[in-house]
Length: 219
Image 1: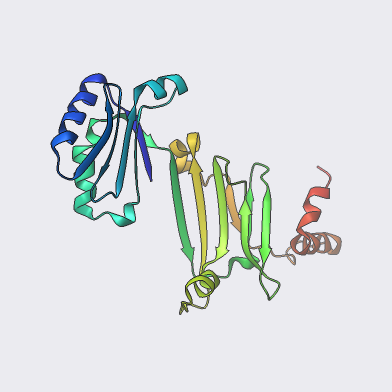
Image 2 (image 1 turned 90 degrees about the horizontal axis):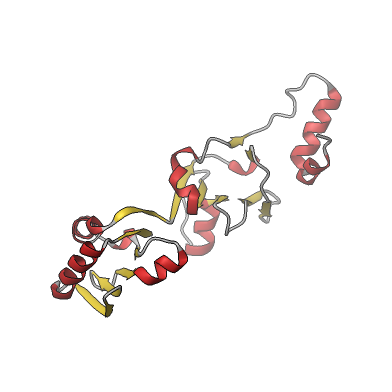
């Protein structure tokens, strides 16, 4: 996780002074307009660089850490002693994950905006992983068979009949709209028998089983 923000001149001096005497922090590369540090047994990286931030038009301080490796007390310490000095703070990336005990191989993820879609199939011919978007875009969606992934990578057998995960990576400007990132995302299980006309049923059936044909439909 990366948290970014701004230090004004007074807070930069105060934080630098605090970190120089705090035993849980190792400070180096210290100048009037920059410093680097590691805290909490090297689990947290801290960097302040006003000159670089001004030249690149970005916020001047960032904090990087893995929240899974910090205890609750360490997170509180980090917030009270480091993050509290920052102004205009926020995230550069947010990862959201949701698990479903259902077989999502027969479901389709659709968005209101055109996005690139990539599907990988398993040995049984069913989809195992679906990607929507590209990795360096503001929003990247991954839907995959979590049960199979756990078995392949960690040799762990999940007891549920099915376990699928939906992951959404949000970056840059999209981070500020994380609460609305699902508004144009629809995960649906199509029923090709629902149309009354036989030719419409045939078309829906073809689109379900031949996804490339979507691009050939007349608008």
